[in-house]
Image (tube, rainbow, N blue to C red):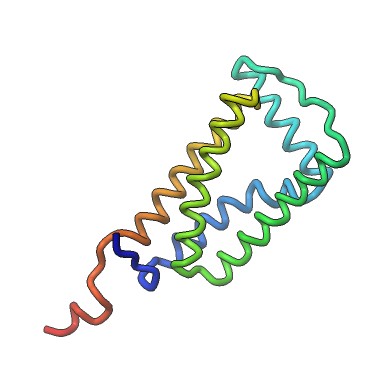
Length: 145
């Protein structure tokens, strides 16, 4: 399948960077991360699961914040340099994250509320991978006539 990395619309890459930043920035800061996790468990309770977040050790919170920081940096990179390669990487990364969510909910007993994230992950994956893989005429081909 042919890729069109040079023809990806910058606004799509930037849009999904902004969508991701809404969660990743909160996970990068310990006080906000604790509130976000509590909110997840509150919604999980409304879905019939456990409504109370378990105690999180300092090491676990470190990895939450580390992950949030890394994703926040990835958001900044995609926003400042919205190139096709980043759309490709992010699109396939979203597919992988969706598979991880399914694994952790189905096999490891993670809260079902995480399944809601599959919606945005897969919409973002389809939107960006469509940009990369859809057929587009070569640059200047339409101007040749």
